[in-house]
Image (cartoon, rainbow, N blue to C red; front, side, top):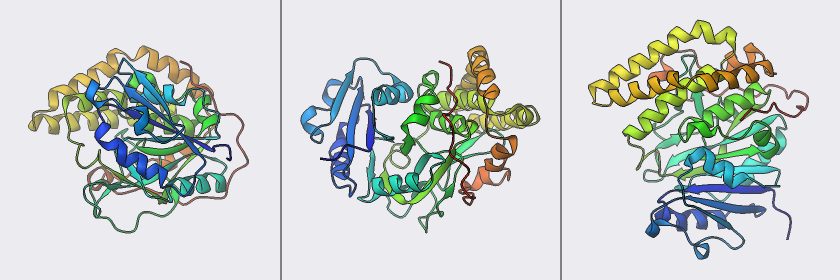
Length: 343
């Protein structure tokens, strides 16, 4: 048997109802050179996965504490020796060519650290769940094409960030970047990771052929206090930590205004208090974020123009959630080892 090329990391939390379908989708992959690591984040006893439920050779890690998405995926990836890591949600069900398409794209584009998947709603095959993550110049990020009718997906190209529900990352780039930022716990950590990879000089691509059907954005994607708090806090952390100074200070008023506007709109639906609390927490705990920022920006290899080119600047994009995919320009020379994020 050939050595695996990919370690697939799945973090579950009360997700047992999805695991049989996810595992069946993995076993149907045309690319067979993978191994599965599943970490369960302190699910309720009746929701915990069993070794017998997983494909042969899979590794099951049972955590007695809820580590969150960020630390859970870092723990699942710890010790991997494969060239590639794939992060997959337990409620994401890949089509058979999915993994082969991700690997083929990565091997054609040696300067791409991460490849995102095209996501379709699992409960509505005619609706997109996502086509890459877009970072607006205001610091607001969104999942492209979320909720839009399914047409031809955007062509292969650069997206600002790959959605963590189904993404491939080069293991050496992931490790050198310090993995997901565990301070985030969950939400926005995939945008933050992609931003840090971009600062290191890597590209992030979005694949139209790597398709998964995802429950989270359609059936289980409702807003609640938990998601609102972490989303509000973590997006400000990412904006402050990662945005180059030449862009940070001119865009800071726009970021604050956009956050205040979003919180004002949320207040009309009774959700405003949690968003205000998330933004307050972002600024109250800013000192370690600023310490990380100093190291990231001192070691930055991407130009300000590289970052600005990948931001969405049109304010209408915040309303229509359209994909922002840039054509792939000629490949640059191979990268040195990416910068390492301090922990």
